[in-house]
Image (cartoon, rainbow, N blue to C red; front, side, top):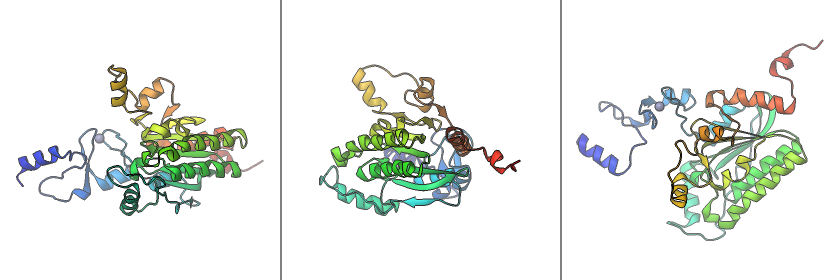
Length: 299
Ligand SMILES: [Zn+2]
């Protein structure tokens, strides 16, 4: 196909996310184009850099398993609830039946649902952690994801250890209707027990995007709420808000930076420093000795 026709075809189909390598090298799986700065990046280099663009620091989305691997100590990660699967209780049909959508998503992603949860250690401290998988139906929270988040908080309360949830979600899963919406209350109630009864801290990590019912429940209830740079965080999307209020929105509206400036989150932490940051904060919140203290000989 001539180049100008290919360009027209790709533009008309919205094929912009994937880079096209130089014409002499037709191996697109080796390269990714940064949507922020346009740089063409070696996938291997990108992976070595934690999926952060080396040129402009754009944070690419990463999966739940990679997230837990990045944040937690290599040994001692014990996954939970990976066999839980959603059912189509409402026999819901949108552009295709929900049951079929679930089956094809399971096949495509190799995951049973939109999360990974684990008992783990971070900087040597025990934690319960749950991370969202955006590739699985936009990280949407149905009854299984809500149950997984609830169990994360309950395990943390039982073990009297801190909880961490890394959100990346389009919100409640509309195909499950009210069964999905009730997860907002259920997760929040479990979190209240973690804080009030077990008196253990919960750190919420917001990544791009954290929206809808997830943003409107446990994601914004952290004792500490941190976000990755540039993450979109909000309930309804900017287009809906703009159309509802009939006004232009301020620049940077709903970005992590905007939320920090307006006091809705506590910190923006680049991915490369998230792990040491969380380790430090966990020690401060739980009163555990610092790593250097712990290593020092006792008198
Ligand atoms: Zn870039």
